[in-house]
Length: 481
Ligand SMILES: [Zn+2]
Image 1 (cartoon, rainbow, N blue to C red):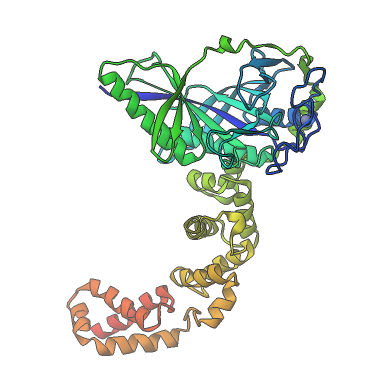
Image 2: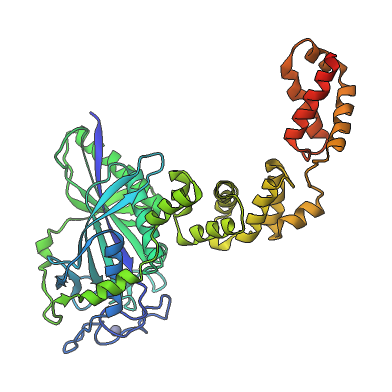
């Protein structure tokens, strides 16, 4: 039997506010353990939380960016559970009445059609602390509460994704948007952007959902794809052996490449959610929504559309170039030098991103400035060099961070467009290859390519290919008499 997966993602994004959600403590990452806490974020009796307005504004920006509805009134709830990194015994979150609902996100899966994924809700909550298991001796766990109370948004998707690739595309798009908005640094290693996946499978064509498992600890795009792929196969095996899937939380072990059971899923009511008695319902004033709307930058979809109309790019190219705000900005600066937009797109995507990927760098670390790449493209356009030679120019530009004209000059790569110089080489080649000349005269037109190739070789690839073609043909045809 053929199965298809049903995938929904829950993404936690840490908002880049300077202070925590309900107190003035710093959210700075990496400080000495337990130096950024106070009675409020530790939940001491008698303390009262005060909501951080900036965090609300950022959450609203996210809601607007995914075309969602911002609820005029939402309610903070206590989610009660016991865990060592949550000494107060509850996490302040939102439950029945979240701040944001009913959004949508356009995604571009690799090797797939663009797809719109529904967003069920986005709610605000505070983060918990961290348990540390290393460096304290056998069997000892230490607790760092610096992260306690850090503002998060949890973005819950509809179960709309049907392959691991679609899930990754959705996650990448979300990641790109929080960074465009500058509301989250997106750092997956430090846990400021993290994802859980709900995965079930069902017979192809079935409308009903299967029992799902929740996968935790997915800390990179690659691990999301691997974990979902593994889990799909595991569930299929269970079903084919006549077993049934247990609803549970499973941990992804990247080293072993497998998921393993962590705990059976508590029902939501096990958390005994109830409205937080210390916080009034959150009434979002229209002015705050307008303020958030006013601070929205041009988002990836709008930029993609503009790149297509303004620069004549294909959908795919425009999508790649708008993946991040930095990359889009780089490309726009290349074009601003006066370089041809399509050629500039090719050089940015193929040559530059190719080289950067190989080195594990991103566009902000490019050794080639946008201005220099723009000049390189123009040197192809004004025929100073051919596209092929340009690749030779690109290498030292990348390695040494120098401009293309310096490379062209230093290595003598200027294209030969002087007709008499090319004619001289063509004559030479014709003189050395009487056999091939005879073949041409006998009607074997294909041999033309041989002559062109020989001329290019003799000139180190620097002769203008169109001119060479033309001159070779003229000279050979002249032999026909
Ligand atoms: Zn605090």
